[in-house]
Picture 1 (cartoon, helix red, strand yellow):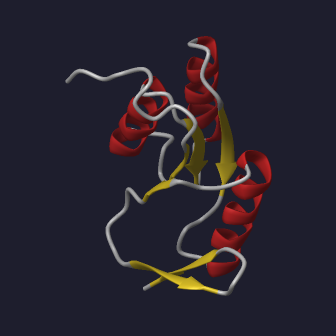
Picture 2: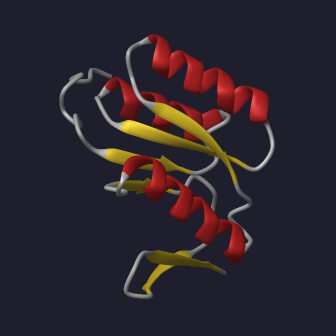
Length: 114
């Protein structure tokens, strides 16, 4: 798979489950394509930080953020912290199965997990 290092330049991404597997691969690809990436993890802080360090070593922008996406309060906090860090979220990727619907409260998206 090829990528353009400028395709997503200036975009801000939040990837859940990004400390391993497919979530990690998606976060890495977004970063290689120029996006700043919030690397979410529920557990696996060391793996998440390793990915952040890898992205930064390649002159990318990233930070790790812990949240359990099955808990609404943690989802709200994750979005708030990501927006505080990046100013916005342009790209969202949820790695795990299940549903997550966007409900606006007028300020930021609130994600409801069923």
